[in-house]
Amino acid sequence: MKRIYMFYPFMPESVIPKVAEVLRSRWIGQGPKVDEFEREFAEKFGLSRVVSVNTGTSALRLVYAVSGIGPGDEVISPALTCTATNTPILEQFAKPVFADVQYESANLDPNDVEHRITDKTKAIVCVHWGGYPCDMKELREIADSHGLKLIADGAHALGAEYQGKPVGICVDFTVFSLGAIKQITTADGGMISVMDEGDYKACIRRRWYGIDKASRKPTVLGHDPTYDISEVGYKYNMNDITAAIGLEQLEYFDEVLARRRQITRWYREELEGTPNIELFEERKNRKSAYWLFTMHIKDRLKFAENMWKKGVEVSVAHWRNDKYTIFGPMRKDLPNTDKLHEDMMCIPLHNKLTDEDVSYIIKVIKNYERARK
Image (cartoon, rainbow, N blue to C red):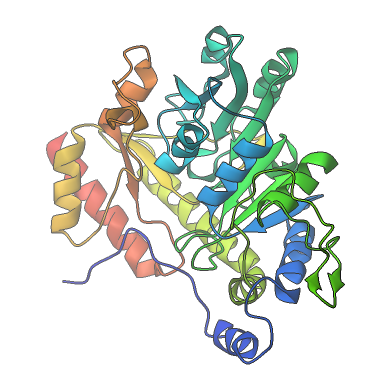
């Protein structure tokens, strides 16, 4: 039986000579390819300032540090997300305060945010679940009224738009993942869209030991001995090998997104009204980046067992974070998160899928659901 994978990386053959060129050059660490990738990435996605890093998780840690989040602070965020959203908050010795999400989208619910704000709150973090943009206008108003940073974990959302604008310019920081199974992959990598110039410069310094490499001048002794490091920095920079992959991936992005959109529309048209299935919302004022296709499924475990039995992998993608000991105990005031934790399910959505694969997935779902209605 053929197996249809839940995720599959997109890596064109044309990447290979580009990487080989870098491997034969002087620069394999952070060099000219990284600079070029940042410029091309910003232009492609309509962003003002971008900072490349080695992973999306590092990007979040860096953003939290630059935002001034520290010991005793609180950060409002969803529990329903990858642990990479919330673990870096703990690394800053701060506390994630979980707010509920919308049942229709799995995105942070603005109506459950404001009452959780205290004098310890430093920032609000939203996650564009599956690539579908959050209610940015409402979240921006709440953050501004309380003087808080608004940070978007856009790991799923590269190419998404909100009210006609790229999601990366709607908040103070937006973090994008370039991980193995994302719309653009550099195997591992991340990008930060930064709106404030001061925050941008801080990200540049702190991704590399607290040093601004551009302003630290070389001398006959190596580097300028008078250059000072005044803040804690990290080793989060991207390298030229990774950047070379990213530059070539950019050439294919429109094709990648178009195919994901096509598959999504196909799923929606065929599965709408299927017994025991409720599709996630889709509003006209926002465009998804189509990283996940998530549904509400009645009796999810039996559904999943049947899909795997028929050769189709399915997944919940991420479990709610407060089920884990480091974030626990599990909250009892997140009713939509509770429901999603029990009924959400994702089916394959990637560029390796053929038309025959998509038709088969739909057929398996319909046959099973009709048989048990």
